[in-house]
Image (cartoon, rainbow over all chains, first blue to last red):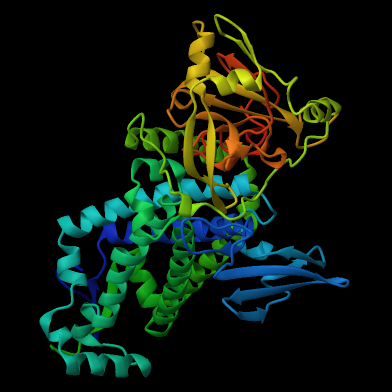
Amino acid sequence: MDTSAPEPIAERQIRVQKHSAAVRLTHWLNALCLIFLLASGLQIFNAHPRLYLGQFGADNETPVIEIASERAKDTIRGSVRLGGLSVDTTGFLGSSKEDGSLVARAFPSWLTLPSYHDLGAGRRAHFTFAWLLVINGLLYMAHGFWSEHFRRDLLPTEDQLNRRHLWQEIKDHVRLRFAKGEEARRYNTLQKMTYLVVAFVLLPLMFASGLAMSPAIDAAFPVLPELLGGRATARTLHFLTAFSLVAFVVVHLVMVAVSGAWNNLRSMITGRYAIADDGDAT
Amino acid sequence: MKTPSRRGFLGGALVGLGAAALSGCDRLVQSGPTDRILRSTEHLTMNAQRALQARGALAAEFSESDLSPVFRANGTRLPASDEYARLMDGKFADWRLRVDGLVQKPLSLSLDDLMRLPSRTQITRHDCVEGWSAIARWQGVQLGRVLDTAGLSPGARYVVLHCADELEQTLDGSGRYYESIDLLDAWHPQTILAYAMNDRRLPVEHGAPLRLRVERQLGYKQAKYLMRLDVVPSFDHLWGGKGGYWEDRGYEWYAGI
């Protein structure tokens, strides 16, 4: 979002430079990594689809979350269990179709990388894209601080943190009414806070909880698994944070679509974003 | 500007790319070049993790109250061979651990020989590659001490651990369990040949009479039913050439994560 001169292209529209090249590049690399990390992560999860709390957890311990597969007569029933709650998910989670018949499988083959059971291949892909994500994340962080992108574009301004303004934003969001004109040059407060949470809370937590599962890293930094409540808890956090990111991406894509899909997409590819030139200076 | 057509084209391209990516994923991870890149990550991970670890950095040791009530037995629970059955019947009195390969003095050690050596006891967490973990107390002799007694010959780089169990029944014996570690891990203070678990003789399902504990790596490195330690310059010519039963079947040789 730099302030290079607007370029008039139509009577009532101007195009502004919205996203810097660094933000665009890291955004798409991030998207690519997250897709592969999710698909390979689900492959890894399938090897033991039970999540525990504490230092350890195996078959004898009670899971907090479980995707269970049970043989029932001539079929296989799948269910998701949360504490005492059990939801039947036959056909999707815990049991899904492979070559026409139901098999016991936590996440279905169309969601995992590879689609067939291969923990080794899933791990190799997971760690490769994890490295790529970390390098990409470091570049993004370095650029964000160095260019003051974080301070300028992501830190809510004083006027945005005003209670009345926030309430107005929430109402506008619910009605899918989006900023126009000059106000559309900057992110709104909810957007800013969401992006800050993703970049500074969820992704770092993903990184930390992932590393806390490594016996080698735990030997180097014993405080890491301790901070996260033990290895089994770290694994649970890794899973929950992953699905928080999935939830973010779903909302993100919906917002991109309803607030001008093509304009948003182009701005993240070429950097140029069209805003109405209505002289509406806020 | 004819944005609609460009829009349509780009939109179509994106959808097509997404579909191709999904259907091509299996082929992508199987293809030679990608597979090589994915496999090379292991070296990056190993170098990075070892650089972060002080050479002797110890795995966390836990207290009595942290012990798993039940420690899941994994892999082989009872080796099927007649030889093992015979050893088990004799309470492993006839069992010997052979130490040979690139050593000055090959050894043949009985369980009593090993128990006479100074021992180390540690309560550590076992992390399975599948994601579960369990905590137990292990007692045994440090591998470095045994290797010091044998004395390494020039060119020694790895210790291959040959096991009594066959995890996969094969005609050529390639289903026999084996593992390997390098000398850095072999001399790590917590790397022990364990003969006791939770204050009792190592149970058969956990690898009686002797198993490896190499605490900064995953569960499949903790070879059970040890029969022979072979000190080698390289494991390229052994079975699948990847240094272990599971390594030959696609897992990383360096199992630090």
